[in-house]
Length: 94
Length: 454
Image (cartoon, chains in turn yellow, cyan):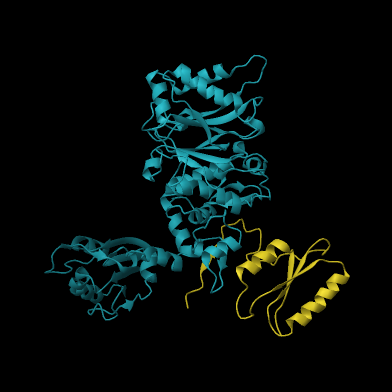
């Protein structure tokens, strides 16, 4: 195991060193939501339910699937989601 | 007054082993002596010593040669000697007849703490406490280059990860205090220290010897006359262009010849890039943030080049702008480019200057007035002006006369806004104009020249 590298901050240090997650959108209006099935058992049941609820609110939904939960998503899937949707929900566990 | 002596030795040094009898004499004399050995805890045999296993003691003492003998009085160092010079050892210790039977003089050996790569490693380990910047620990599996991208530190190209060792090595390139504030970096008006410039110079790929040039460029950018905030925030194409004059150009190996405005030379490329990274990271100026450029230009990655003073009959640009004769200096110009001035036919200065004027007339928009520009005169065009006996001032005056148009009160070229430099490869009758900003002079950006320090 290599040593954990430490870098010297090149910035004016007005923002926290810890990377913050992107801010949650105030509204889903006009945004397309991606639902990513990672091919894990019963993930589709959770996502189907979510899909239904989003449909009720008139929000556009697109469905995507990883070939296997054991590996990270193929680049093509990530790129397709990034270019077609503003948010993504993935069903992580069974 | 308390006298204390410190001795640093290593077994793998013939001079150190030769002096065993001297160590015994020092110990027997009763003077207070600490002995540190760099490689073998069983050495010296004549006195007991401690192993400087991590070389921290040697690093903190600044030992370069072993043996080194240091005298302290009341905690303050009052003398040191290295190698074996009997007279020096006797003077330092006040003891006489040291090492009787030994030769009077033997040079020492290089200390382990100054072996290649060690000073940087030891500095990072034991000497980085004075770095004031926040430390950013990465996750164990995080790639350093990707980490810099993820944190928004990059201009789009990979950066050299700014480790403590690299930053400390970079700071060795200047005599200035890392904590010295050069000014407030726009747009966030954060204090820009020598240390922050060094961190960004590391990321840009600079060698430590480039740092004084980068510091001068940053000082020029932070000069109120240059108006860096406006240069950043404008919707115009421009960015800072760094023109370097003086001996430092050759000292750091800049390219003033073929492809001078292009890629391929480390100093040209990284000095300009370091300035842009300072603006991005210390100032917080990012595209689509405060940088509102509609199009920008490729020179906003880096735009830095030296004048070819050796090939020029004219005095250096920096001298014409008030810098000392023979001094190294940077001139910062808010501009973009490159607009070609192509003339393979003119053989007289009068004919050639008309071609330059033609390009200026149509530059950006025929109605543009009061513009600033850098004119980069290529060697083959320079030859025509030189053969005609024209000075830089002659060229500027002829250009202004040629650009006088009836009906316009405001001149095409702003008074004081034309910088003429000579650079480029020996073949090709192709000069260039680097146009400036729409806001020129006191209402916008004024070119700034700063001498390069140490």
